[in-house]
Amino acid sequence: MSSRTYAMALYSMSLTSSIVQPAFGALSDRVSLRNLYLTVVLIITFLSAYSISLTSHFWIFVVLVFFAQLASSAFHPMGAIMASTRRKSDLAYFTLSGMFGYAVGPVFITWYAQKTNLSGLFWIGIALSTIALLTIPRMRFLKVEKKAPPKLSLNGIKILLPLLLYVALRSATMGVAQVYGPMYAKLAGLSLVIGGSILTITRFVGMALSYFGVHIGEKIGNFYINLLSSVLMSGTALIFSMVDFSYVVHPWSILNFSRNITWQFVLLFVSMLAPGYLSMSSVTVEAQKRLPMNAAFASSIAMGLGWSLGNLVNLLYSSFFGNNILFMVKSIWVFAVASLAFAIWDIAYDSKRSS
Image 1 (cartoon, rainbow, N blue to C red):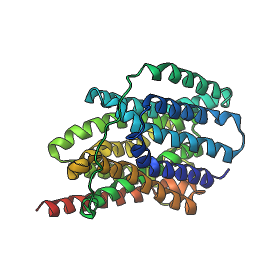
Image 2: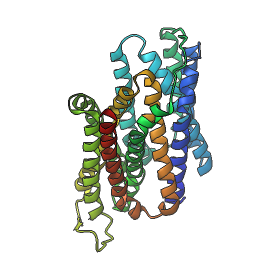
Image 3: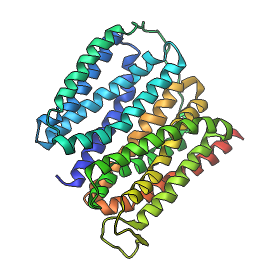
Image 4: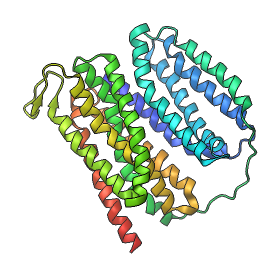
């Protein structure tokens, strides 16, 4: 398949699953058999994701991954509810565990694919489904709380608009890097595992940056964390665009590594993508501060809707240029600079609103 078809399929699935997540959140507030609900969506996730080894047809692969992503979107609101009913620290562990799995996934699957060509992958799905069946019934049953629907106004949505656009462009920057970075690594002659490792390393660094971003944001302001995140992404993305790892020298490539490029590639890629995680949690905190009476709605805007718009930008962009891997990688800085512009606008808008 072409790189454009592959990228567009991923962006389309991510876009759809992000859009419907608020609907799953509303459903989670009304489901009474929460343990059963959680068991079902986990099993659908496991079996769909790990059944990709059973097909050699691309569009069946797309359907399986799509169901896995939908089930994952259905899982997150309910998982967050069940994790936060006892102690706030439990929700922190829930989030940290998710980020850990998100980080380990790329290096695991690329290693497994290189070693086994995905043979027997579905047995992992069956094993995880069995664990879910044994574990979920042991969880404490939670009663559904009756809550009045929050009142929203157009002014409340307007307050979040600059923040929403910032998240969208930051997500677009990270989306292009995460999909085309491993392709570029392969183009540069690096192994498949290196392509997965750059995502894993980035996400582990991102876990730390996201944690510190929240605490630093409480002292200096979350919007300055957003600004710093975009400045770092923009600067390193510009440097990354000037380095040529593909052995195809261009006149606008001021640096060229001809041998032993692995560590340079990993270092520059991580330095470009990891700063995006610095504002990952602080954006949500800032959105909730601006709409304290509608914190859940604010969170869905800062996360789900922002990510959806970012995926939409990626989908449209890759539909035109997606087959040109080198061009896609070299133009990441454009999205990073755009996110910087929206971060500056958000600071100016919030200052004007406060005064």
